[in-house]
Image 1 (cartoon, rainbow, N blue to C red):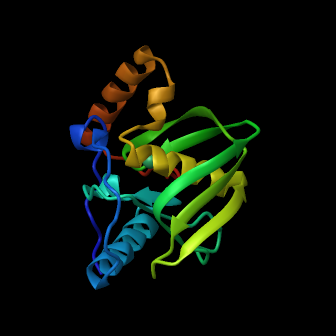
Image 2: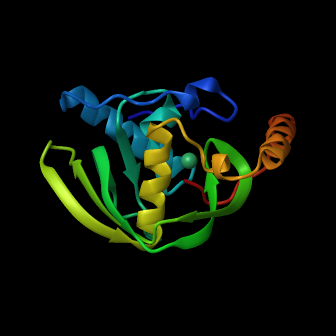
Length: 173
Ligand code: ZN
């Protein structure tokens, strides 16, 4: 296993739209293991393939406190959305910055698991927020895109400053 480099805003590679996974083989499973290791080490509660410069529709999450509830979603698709919830989000690709985003409270999502089996699941709470955040990454979208351009400019400056003076960050996706 290996810890992968996480792309950071404003890297243009974060804007690429990921392509569907066509083959689930040992190579892909090794990549999934690396993504989990990278996410746990960061530490984060979710990671999209796009964030580690792998442009396939694949994401990993674990929103449990004990870090014992890993989920892999391959070719995830949101089938329906219900309700609204606003929460503070962070992102491993936008280090040191949190802000409020409104998303669906409950989603129904279809995906393939790590063995290629078809799954369909109703998800709510933090896991639903996290999956929506990660699917946005696969579409080249960041949580800060929901904020104003003025805020994004500010974030760009904060990140530049942090690169000069790194400090520990909060839990992020
Ligand atoms: Zn993120």
